Length: 364
Image (tube, rainbow, N blue to C red; front, side, top):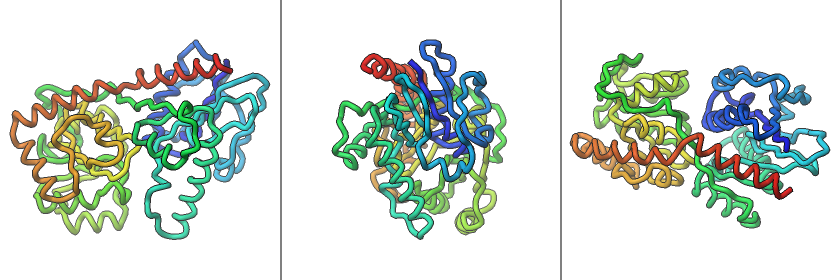
């Protein structure tokens, strides 16, 4: 049976969590001879930092109307195919062709949960809600990346049949691993065990401000991995931390991030809401302790650790730092993290998705 994967996320994101998940799926399916695979791509996909590392034969690419992409991206693609086929989009789109078996990967319900301010933001939120609702209600199979996301799905869509929902965890790259007696210089100005890492988006729910304010009081250095600071962000950070106390690094490769994790005191991950939380597993697999907020999917993913914070307070954060000052306790936490990270792999994710693909084709 034919499988059509719509790589639209590569045209929407330069990089991001969904791009990572989709890249790992596409990379494996592209090399799998068990299926007749086609890929739909749109303009500017080559700007995605991950897509450029995959070589897809032009014979596997389907051409659809790419005009007015910024408008068309919110409408379902038109596919004229007269035999049953699996359609799996990377961004909450379905094929309305009667022969389609629609798969949707549900990452999170961020646009349903947060308090969004301003008309423009409200409009974006409502647009995404509409797109998600339409896709979820018309999907044949729904892949949730955690039980937390599954619970949210059931909460928002109680009418969805449970047999349609499958929980398949994200994986973690083998680029992350402990480096014994690390003496390799990183591009960071900080020395080994002289800084904490904050990775990814700095949206309100990520509680970046809490990290900056707390580390200022606790006199800890901060390495920020992600986009360069906006003007307002820079003013905020500089009002709490001296110039030599923080650094921002963008476009960091996996190998460089692995070095940074290996050299850090810890990853601080105080997000209030996550569908999964890939950086948690990356850090653990690199042997880096993770201090995280005990919310949404995080306790499900992070495993057994004393570094879960029930309330975001400076005292609770400082308690975690005190634990890490004890070498025996720190080593136990690192070993727990390494063991926990073994639960997740991209190959395992792909094997489970492939199994569902085959079940879908057999039942059609």
